[in-house]
Length: 292
Image (tube, rainbow, N blue to C red; front, side, top):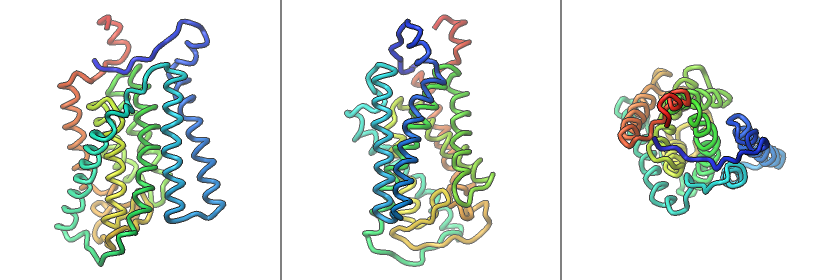
């Protein structure tokens, strides 16, 4: 068993503060308030393009800072899952993996005649998608894997935490433009499972942040596809034609059965590797029976 330990105190106040639901609220609420404040200001100022992406990046980095403060003040431990020494090697691995996974998806769609390139745009078009992808990756991985999955896993174990966090991740994407029940299910099975599996395997957040960033950036910033319902503006001008189950319709190729299959298989591989490492955590009632 491999689980990040919280430095608990016996006092009644600290028992309350370290209750799982309390900890989730304490970690997530300031991040939500920060996101609402900055995005509302950006909308009021009609910021778009590179300026809008810079705001998105600020939200993501702000979420990271809030999380670090939360861990140090409430959980009273080192933030080992965001160790500075792991950043470059693990983020790079995740970024490469994310690029390969979305590229494999686009390759299958291109070979099937579903995806076609219409032309190329100036290289500068990739700047805004890259900044936005970094911001989104930090925000979503901190909240979903760093807070929700990790804290739920401490009590309910790996498998229930994986299922619940994947479901929540899919439902949150139901708020995006062009979302349907198919896209919600696709995101839950595809990204929700894969990104949790990567965290379980590595027991740190950098690889998942890198994967998430590369997927979003490559999908919209390179291949010109819609990203979770947001219209893609990137290096390539492209179009999709075919059945919605294959193209993902307005939501983008994330809702394609091709992406679901590729990422679900990748997630399964990471879960197998995590199990070999002994990273699967039993629920509290099973741990109580075994005394571990």
